[in-house]
Structures are given as C-alpha cells and as structure tokens.
Length: 116
Ligand SMILES: [Zn+2]
Image: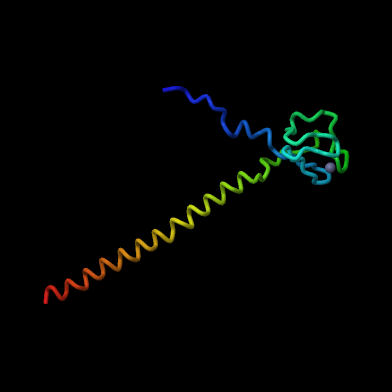
C-alpha cells in the first residue's frame, strides 16, 4: 500500500482564512484580495506585506485576528448536497416503514380469518 502523501485539507485551507480588523471590523478575504491596495484575489493574509494596513482605518496588519475559513460557494454546495441527501432518504425510509407496517398488519389481520 502506498502512503497517503496528500496534504491535509486543514493545512492547505489555512491560506484562505479571513482576518478581521479589530478596530473597524473590516474582514480581509483572501479570495477577494484588496483592490484598494492592489492585492490580487487569492493572496493569503500571511503573504500580505508587513506594511499592509486595513484599507478602511489603516490599522496595522498585527491588529487583525484570524476568523477562520471564508464562506465559499464550494462549502455551500457541500451543505446543499448534505441537505438533499437527508431530504431524499427520510421520506423513503418513512414510506418503507409505513408500507412495511401496513403489509405486516394486513397479513396479521388476514391470519385471523385463516384461523376461523
Ligand atoms: Zn480597520
């Protein structure tokens, strides 16, 4: 068996963590970048210049806190798939339960006539 050499998702996604300005609440989103200061979309917070400041209130980079992964469309799609999975499975299981109970009940009911 080959060892799993893939990079753990949690590590590779660290680059896309959003960072919030503790002074004004501005959130730097790596996948959007910072058009005001010429930061290209896809630039992680860590790779921003140490001279980079909040585009709203000019607070230094050190006054930002990591607020975790951005709410990306891909994550939304995963949630959608999960929701559909549950929504599709539940009625099916309910139907199986109902029809199964009906069938058992019908057989049980008919058995009384068979005994008579
Ligand atoms: Zn700010």
